[in-house]
Image (cartoon, rainbow, N blue to C red; front, side):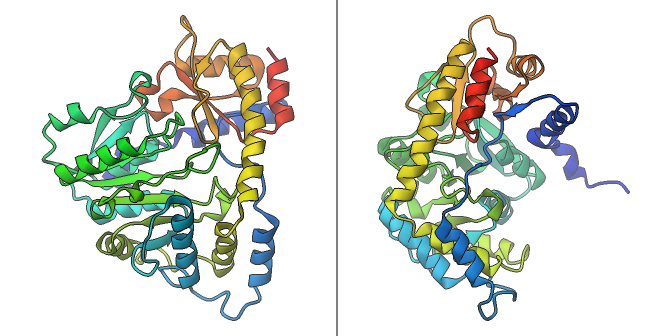
Length: 380
């Protein structure tokens, strides 16, 4: 059977392919320490797990659920945004729960992009933005991010280009993979740029609560709802990656457009998972403090490992990764990663999987226990 032409525009996800190689090495008896992928190794809170367990005997728990999620889940999301970001949004009209924010990337793209529409993509940035753009037969158009500019786009230079075909722009602050943050002034400039050029701006925001002293949402900017959607997720903040719980927030019109796609793609999220998500969103300040304590200890050790490799990094970056610049004279990012993998049995992500501007960089995940990071340090 001949596959659809659209599959010719994408390749197998890097981690899908590389982790297969890593597993083969482990099967050979190699003591691999995986520092490549950001899959939280910590558990959700006991309250979340208890809520999930207790909910499965509720009446209707195993029936199809609403495409829009439980009303109380939408309320919990709206209250979370009000408490944490100062964003007021109607839970009935401006909130749509998702089965992970990654599916939201596809839903948004299908809802707003026609064949040939152009999409502004960050370089470096999350590779799924580009692959989904190609799958819906839109045209990827990257914009450069650099360490010298704080990993923020040069909006002045972009404004001078022909943007007449651009329909959508992806941003992610805190930024993945670098951990860079954006000030309120910078977020305001993004909203103004989108309005001036009639572009739908989408901020992918899953890292706000990991090692971040000042969580922000682009929806807190005046007028942002007119032209902006924001994706968020419980995966990183609440150690619920495998639960697949995310959300998109925006105007009634934009949320309805996404819902039209989503309602044709699934039959609702499992009831128990939704109830667990509500419990997570109602977590007190001690949850966030405890999480940061764990990641702070790990990050300090990861800095030591980076020092051993002669890399440089920003201590102000947030999120669950450490983005490092390779020392002068080092081989390419992928060659460097393979050398460390085969010589020291440590897997690190090369910066190039996030775009050409990731060349010369590598990324460590903090989803590794302290004793394993110490063991990695000792290998050098």
